[in-house]
Amino acid sequence: MCSLVLPPWRPLPLAASPSLPSTHPLPPSSACHVPTRARTPPRRAAAVPRVRAATPDAHDAAALMVARAEAGDFAEARSMWAQLLHSSAAPCLAAAAPRLLPAYARLGRPDEILLAARELAARDPAAGRALYPLAVSCLGAAGELARMEDAVLDMGRLGLRVDSATGDAFLRAYAAAGTVPQMEAAYRRHKSTGLLISHGAIRAMASAYIARQKYYRLGAFVSDAGLRRRRDAGNLLWNLYLLSFAANFKMKSLQRAFLEMVAAGFRPDITTFNIRAAAFSKMCMFWDLHLTADHMRRDGVAPDLVTHGCFVDAYLERRLARNLTFAFDKLDGNAEPIVATDGIVFEAFGKGGFQASSEALLEATAGKRRWTYYKLLGVYLRKQHRRNQVFWNY
Image (tube, rainbow, N blue to C red; front, side, top):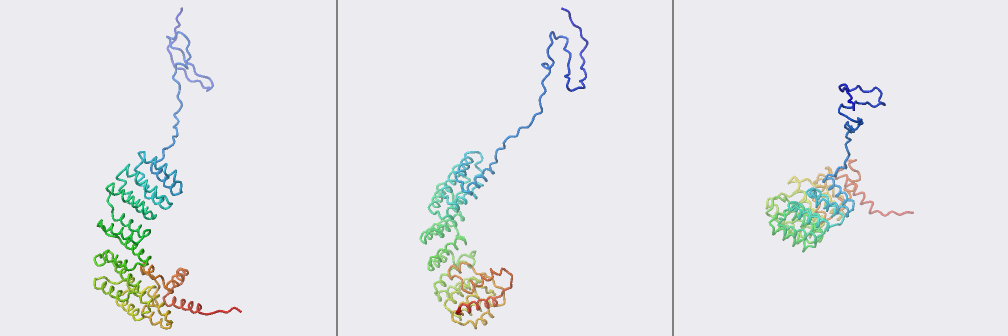
């Protein structure tokens, strides 16, 4: 065999035409012709990034769960709750609970509230401290007293202390949906814990007593709640104490309680005066009505629409409408009408004719006209005059 001697290898320039492939000579040691393409490394195409489906964030999943529950899809919401609970995203459930549990309560699913509180507390005891008070509040707002009691018992088993907010929610629930003996038993339990009853719970219990016309028990309750000891409640307890006598028209006891209030260092406000004025108006005690107006002017308390309504209703009851100008002069009848009285007074006495008519007129005009008590009185008297007329259609 003969050896073939070749010159040293040099790369040839690339062909100008892209259609012709470039060729390379073989190295000297090659004994057979091997295709050049097999010896050169293959060219790799540019890496194209693949689009992966992003895993939904835990907070987004919790928000979707809440949206499902609010839409009424409880099965889907329950399934998402179970998936999140048994995953590393369980801490996001505590952040979603303030929206999820009220949605269950609003849509009539109290069992889901208690179940969610138990499952999350078993997984994360720290989250149970914040979740159980919320569950008690939601169950109480829904009127589910039995399940609310179960939640409170669970708190006791877990060693969770009932705080002031939970105790107030407990009292409000019994005031709204329970009987008076049940409410009073709940108040004794709340008091035994040493917690101070809040203003909202006081109002809720007072409204329950007034709705059932238990005025004597109302007076006993406010006396026990710190009538002469609590300064943080302002005049709320004293006004409820006066209301317990005024709604029963015990006028001597009302006057005696008012003097006790002043002697204890409490200053009467507009609600205090209007409680007395409402009782005097119902009894048509004109002298006491005018003494109340003088006392208000002396203490610098401006009368409101309720005060003027007490005078108007009493005078019209005795057909003394022509004398109302004298009373309105003492009450500053040229002032703009306002209502500054606590609404709990209306729960006991209701709204008088002049007040109800004037409020409807003020709402209808909606600030398009400047009103005074004199103008409202003129409209109301014309309305009463037309009501007493008999029209015959011929």
